[in-house]
Length: 274
Figure 1 (cartoon, rainbow, N blue to C red):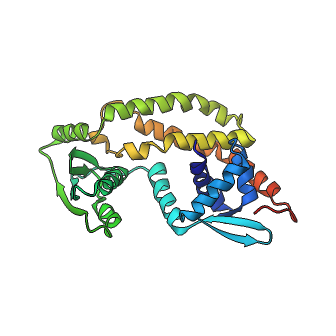
Figure 2 (tube, helix red, strand yellow):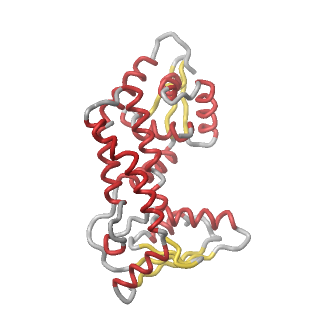
Figure 3 (tube, one colour):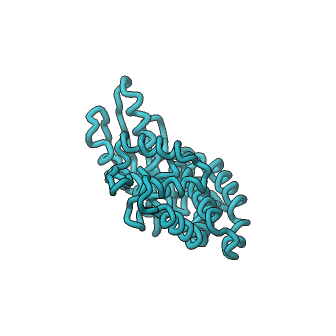
């Protein structure tokens, strides 16, 4: 787990519910659970502040950090994709995005492709991406300030269920994705009994829960959250999501108790922490 990502995860899963900000000393204590030294924490928060992800203020002799609105928006968007799945039956409509980006704007084209994948679109061809979910307006809004990007959004139906499954198989490598889900299940499903028994406490619970999030967060970038009609048989993704949610919930109590204990003990009146 990268130290930079840990800062975002600590704010997103814990500190947001404790006023949304943290003293530097508290961040140092929390990051210490992951063997991140104080000097590294200071460098990271300094960089994040310069990049516009963190804001800071002085409280006496201490420095207090909080995520900026831009960072919160990014975090909330990611949280929605990680924790929630599309509900209800599919209406059979494909939502297609056709894009055009000048050859000179290769970086912008790659950014567009990453954003399309994040919104659950897959490439049917080089510049034609599609999704069973109606998220074309979200893509257009994300690039509204980029005049070099031209986007056309369409709705379409195929000839039938067999064609729909073929389209899904061509737009996404579902077999490889399923193997990744199987690997995640092999790691965390056997641990559920230990989580239920409360065997993880203190820093162990915090680290385990953060590692769980770290391991699972790759999937929203790869998984288009397809409706059951488009998935192969014995699909492991839904079970993996259920195991993730259960494990995350079971570890919540002891992990939050650890955060509370560390943030309380880190506030020592009269000592410099900034």
